[in-house]
Image (tube, rainbow, N blue to C red; front, side, top):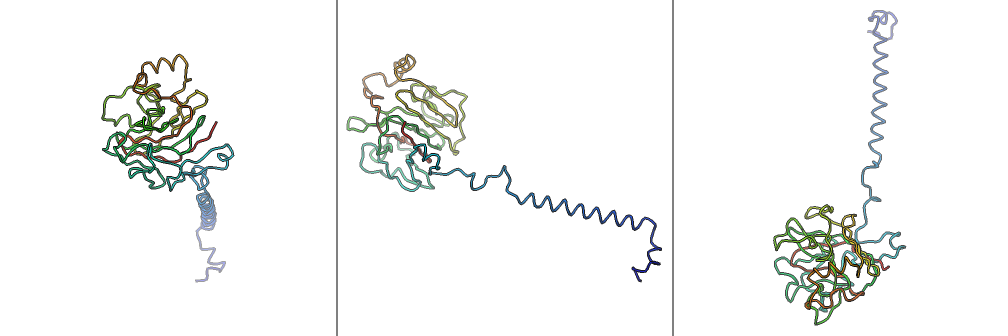
Length: 278
């Protein structure tokens, strides 16, 4: 059959050619739309995380370097750290998966002859510190500052105030009071009950500011504690705290000292530890 013969075309239904034109135009339109959608889907989405959006781990940005930040943990070694009142690190502290880990489970606070908190070799006076931390179920630890060593000091907390690191909900020891919960200035100033905490196994962000007696604690971007040393509120809190008495005569006495990661008998992870002097 000769499909190009004009006689054949005359035998087709009256609307056949119009319908074919509509079908062809529709197909072309669908093809164009599909091409646009395919091209759009191949573009990087503004809502997707790209390599440039991924936060640096254990590294400083150029902006942080320009602002005077110092990296306290390089992601692979414990250079710049030591165990409190010891010359060696000890077996409980190690680096794994770009994190500092204390594996002190079941060994109690200070973990006997093998444990003890990890402190910086360098000492700091006025500073701002940021650090990611992750707790184990029921875990307890802390970030302390102005820590001083000596045979007369059994633990870091004998001299250094503490930013409390804690699994509040999972804690199975003695009942906690408000100033013993995560984000608090331990036994002095309580973090609010409305604070933002991440579930066990997820990273939290701590920040401590100490500047000539002005102290701030931050947790996950929210200020949880702020006070002035020597103020009426500070003196009142001190009078009610465990630090008031003969057992801790040098607590918060020193205004320059090491930063400490506390061994309190539970696995805790730390990373992105950064400080700048003020």
